[in-house]
Length: 298
Image 1 (cartoon, rainbow, N blue to C red):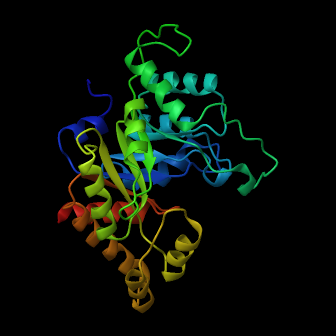
Image 2 (cartoon, helix red, strand yellow):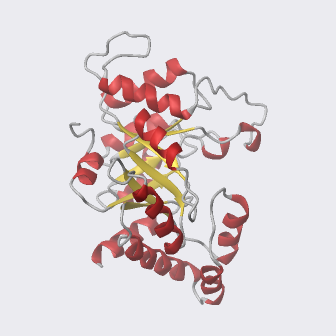
Image 3 (cartoon, rainbow, N blue to C red):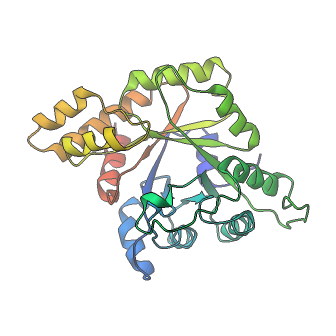
């Protein structure tokens, strides 16, 4: 496959990549977004643009991704099936590629009942696996699912989500995503190297590692309290006690959290099949930039 994006090229060449994340602002001024993400420019290899996370509306993820692309920051557009039917999603894929937004992450989206407009009706015309398959068809077969041709076809580097668990991944589910068109995976937060090693070993045993790329989720905490909140509220997240204890005992928990992230990145680099890290955290663009810069020095 020809390179679909700069991120695709870097991964293909064996570069250990750093991706970050931003949530578009509650603003109709593009400069608010540009200023928010400026610290990540020329630091992160790509920046995920979330699609109304928590089912709370923000600036359009597609619009925000285009703004980043035009500002010299490579975006990863997160697309959820929650809000748009297949026609709208397919149109977004073509439009995104036309404006140099070539990385996409296909997701289901959070339930609107948990958002701030719970009366919202979820669309869910298709599921995320069908979105992946549609994107793959549009890219490779150069046509819409209806059979109509797309000339030229969109360039798309297609991502899927995964939740690493110790010793219990579902290889068949991952292989199904790959056969549908997934080129790379970004995962939920991982804070235990042994958990990651066990997970990746099972993927290796099932021949998965040579078929795709894995970018492992990680992120800084504001405090031990926030780490405990993640344990209680985020699916698939397990912050071990020894990390919580370090945060509780630290005179500066934020500084200690940065140190923990940098230590884990160095450990993750040694795990077979890990192609990069995905650093997440609400409104933590600047500290994520610092973590990436310090990790690159090591």
